[in-house]
Image (cartoon, rainbow, N blue to C red; front, top):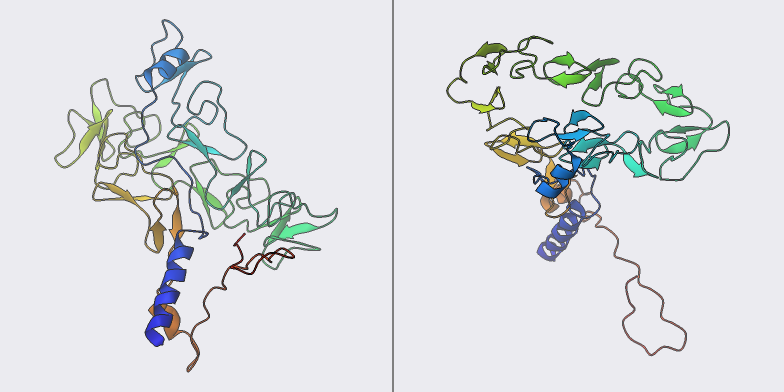
Length: 314
């Protein structure tokens, strides 16, 4: 009996991991495919000279893989709060797409707990529920109860937003690596336009390695458009130049993958929280009592007068 129960519980946990777990990202495939030639040619203005991966949109050269105003093509703008990853718009982790805008369901008074669930006048949205006041430790920013110590939209104070690539730590916006150059977080260890510091550009034909301009990349690194990178660990060049991982994934030994504790569900384009194993769940159950499994799906009632038989699952 014990073995049969453990087997059933393992099946339930496996289904939860890849069907309804916590979504981390919904970005494009790793190493997103290049835009077809017809689309690229349509975006270029006759004699404009843009880099091979760029498009000429409105007289300016833009990167359709990362520009939220021209994501995948000229004038293809992403919604409010969305980022452009590999030519596709995506909402940052912790937000959902509601009516074309990326919102935080835990704090947005217009979408409190779910898209379209608006709080009444005078109420605030705290921890995903409408309430008269914010929970302790949270600040009321226009009806949204936020932690100004970690909120990228209200970092240190209401409406003090970080740039898209920054994170908020202890109420201050910070870049994961490098520095904020020209409004974007830049890895000054390898960027030839900001080598060692913002605005310190390498000369034509030089590369940037460890924050110093030089003639060639050191052994063990790869020259990716003047940036000397380690393709075994670089999320922007994982396994090869421009083979970027989806947001929230790590590059290990040249392959993109989910962080520890997350599961890569095939076809879902997301890393989901890995549930505990059946054995671990059983060890936390009360002595003498099996751990509680997920409830079985409710069966639809049989129509009046219908012949006896198995009911259908809605």
